[in-house]
Length: 411
Image (cartoon, rainbow, N blue to C red; front, side, top):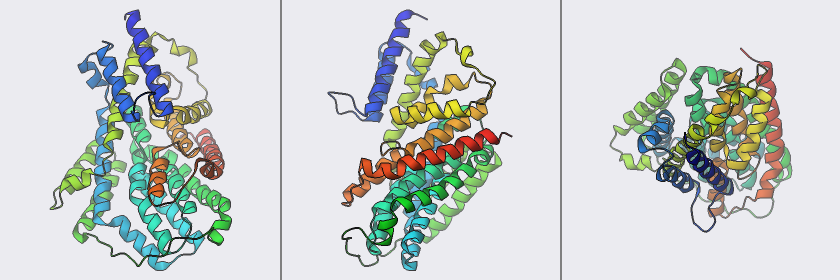
């Protein structure tokens, strides 16, 4: 291993992660996916690795699983599943607190099995429409939607992108992952409802300022046959996950089965977050270059410990997730968790804390940004400070619950 490769790999890695932390590269109009791709190309261009090694660095299981779940969620949306659920809620005209409970539960449960970013894409415009119809202030429900999607996604490997990576790298089965982390998600969703209801107790009693005029109920368009088939395929896929089937293969087969329909597949492909997949592939290459040329020179055995890794891993993950975002933070932990005394506990603590840390600030997760952007287009401004009213206490409470649960239950 030559010193110049070590120096170049460290420089490129540091530059990419600094740019990811700021979300842009000064002087250029690059977003995070483009930054990761440029970093990967630089690793190749400067000879840190060749194309074959770079291709091997990309975790195919992660990319395939994420793609399959996005397509699956896309078909559910096209079939009218979420629209139908929203129509049922609107027809029942629940009270403000009951409606908040429904939004939190729907967002949390769907995010537990489908990628939470995709869930927010589907639910945000429908929650806005629901608030308009029932003449309710939208901000409390939007905050509840965003935070619940993060909390609910803790429960399973397929809940969010970082969990998908952790599931692939750790080798923890889908059922065991859910058994250890689903209780945290359940308690977390209860805390989400309580914190949002407390912070917005006045708004939930009386609308704060004028609300948009109610629109006549929109005609719900659903494809009955596709709705039934997509629901059965989704349930079957989740059952296969719990039965121990390879999750990436199961998700890809499920997506392929749903494509055997008269509906054009490109409509479902619109639900795929292609920039996110590009960012993942770029980060895999950048992190591999750093590991192979820099980390291998370190004596990581000195940090190996027989004690519980839950607290140190959780605290470090919370900090890094809000510094460089949770997906890059998770990849940073790979060499460290390989040498600790209890790697499974470490991976579970990383999944829990990196996900719940996404609720700390508005910029903490992609799901938050999706909700904010849809709200902005609808004329609803959810500001950074406004979000902190819920984000800070909720993150502290849920992380405390998660750390306590993993520390006290080790089986």
